Structures are given as structure tokens and as C-alpha cells.
Length: 286
Image (cartoon, rainbow, N blue to C red; front, side, top):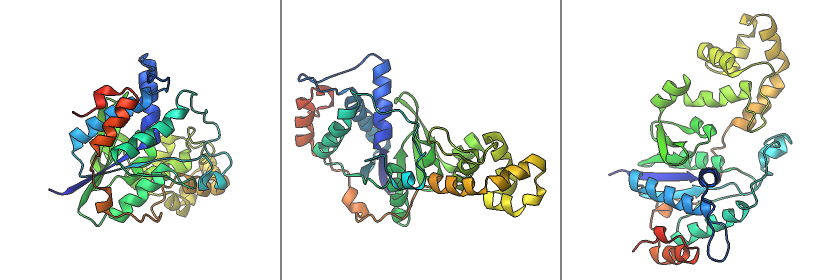
């Protein structure tokens, strides 16, 4: 049996768990008043995915701070995002406590995002005998899809998922994985506050990428563009370059762990102590 590495996009999943349980009216707390709904749901989803995928290795990648290298490149990057709800904020620390108790490794660094750790892990381990699954609803991760990297995409709340493979990505978007970056670099992304090229929307961007493949090739054939379209690309060249840098997941971070260091070996003694302490009794393993 080949090795299977499950990479969980921690902040992404915790946010999704929070809103899924909040809208369901399940704002759970422990007996001593600590909000637990998001972390409790996180544990349940992780348990379900582990049972379904049966990974041999597991790691959680996290966002640690807002001022990453991308914020240094553009002060507008993610500047329009709302702060986390008050009852979610303490659950980020609680999630880390749960992972520690379960003996699950997690990566975080104030200068980089969870995506960058995921991308660097994929690059580091691509020559190993390992199939990689990334649990995330972040479409940026789709640029990492390959023959041995699949994205588990939660679709309805956190319960149903779709497996994003190269063929599924082509079917869903009409794009190759590398073109996810190209698309965002010209069409922009309002959720991350990435400009792209002013006046170029997603439909136009996809049409151009279908014909030329990359944005650099569009610029190499700039004289084939007509009227306003040509003008938009000429005027938006600097915005395109910055947008592409912001949209590209780093794959070169120094990761000192080897695959064997990420073996899934849950410490159920300390995990059960944690679950009991925070009244997450259904997660206790007997």
C-alpha cells in the first residue's frame, strides 16, 4: 500500500466548522464557558476524513498572522476581510491544543500562509511514494492539483465533499492547475482583494487562457488583441505582475520534516483527556 498524506487547511476548516454549526444553532461551550462549537466540529470532520481516506500521515497547516510577505507586497491584500467573530477567536488556540493533545503536527509561520506550507510540502514530497490529499475549500489550492495531489473540497457545510483531481478540475473550470494562477492574475479576486487587470472579468480571462495558455503568451501576442482589450492589457501590466505574485502559492519554504516525521500516530490517552476536559465526549475513543 502506498503512503497517503492528508494535509488539513486548519484555519479554513475551523472557519467553515464555525459557520456551519453557528447557523445550525449549535453554539456549544464547555462546562467552564469556553466556546467549543468550531473545534468540536473540526474534530468530527477530521475523524470522518481519516476514516474515509485512511491516511498513513497527517499534518495541519495554519495561518498565524495577517502580516505575511504578501501584505508587504500589497497593503490592500486581504484588507477588506472582516475580523473573526469574538467567540471564534479563542477557538484558534483551542484547536492548536487539540492537535497537540492528539499528537498531530502543525506548521505555522507569521510570514507565510497555510497554502505556502501545503505547496512546499507537495514539492518536497513529490518524489516520495506518497499520494497527497489536501482538505480545503480554498480555490487557491487548486493550483497544487497534480497526478498525486488531490484536493478534498467540502461542498455542503462540512459534511459532503468532492475530490478535485486534474480531470475534475478541467471539467469544473476548463483550466489546467497552473492556469488557476493565470486566471486570478488577470481576473483578480475580490475575497483576497487582488486587483488583476482592470476591466477583465473571469469569462474573458478564461477565453484568452484557452487560446493562449498563459498570460505571458497573451502579452507575446498583444497585437492580436483588439481595441480596448489591448489597451487594458497594456495599462494593466504592472497590476498583472503584482497580482500573479500574490496569487502564486510558494513551494520553496524550508521544511525540515521528512515524511516519516508526519506519520499518523494519535495519542488517545492525551486526546481523550482533552476531549473530556472540554466536554467533547463523543470524540472520546474508548
